[in-house]
Length: 298
Image 1: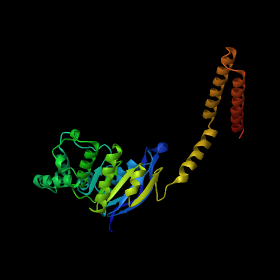
Image 2 (image 1 turned 90 degrees about the vertical axis):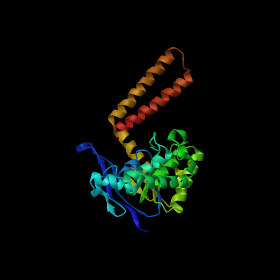
Image 3 (image 1 turned 180 degrees about the vertical axis):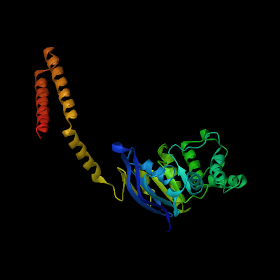
Image 4 (image 1 turned 45 degrees about the horizontal axis):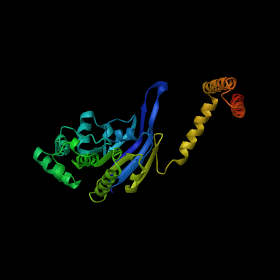
């Protein structure tokens, strides 16, 4: 199978000087024609940034993106607009349909903008695409007249309109109920298996894994072939070590213990706490103070 997408050492860095933040860190990725690849990761892992770069909506700080053999990082903005309209399809969590256009008109729009079809051809193809996704009878409805699941299927038909090399999906079931999610996911799987469409989907929904031909994982700006199970544990240890060494954190903890001690004293004077409970609380305070003192002495 030919290569639809190739990423070579992709970095995305925001800020400058000492305030630089690397959101993507040297990502390499290859997707073959006909694959349905899912990239899973939590919020803040770099999923959306990666999708924006692949979709030519943003440029990497470093690295190259090849789509259908074309180095899109070398194209100027006008060239990118035309390339994007012809070679890449998009499906978003919030559908992004134009509210004052019918389902048919929404699907026609990318064909007309791509300059590959005249209006008559675009209308004919849009109607067939709506039939393909099971919405032929809804062609003349506006988005507000359709359910979330129906709107997402219109969005999928729109993404298919120019026969793109690759369809990018960002949380395609994020706003859908269980039934609508099942309908959309089964449609995606069918389009991949029968229609031969290549998909790249970013999500944190583990249920989508069932339809994938390949699953990748993104964490802290890096791509993994297997779930990075130990990564969170390592990060936790690092953060805990920082907190233990932080004088600001220790000072805040001591202040909290001091406030707690004052509150216990007041409760004891007013008889609002039993002696046994007071002893327990004081013993707990002593243990916490002892712990802080041991950290200071390290």
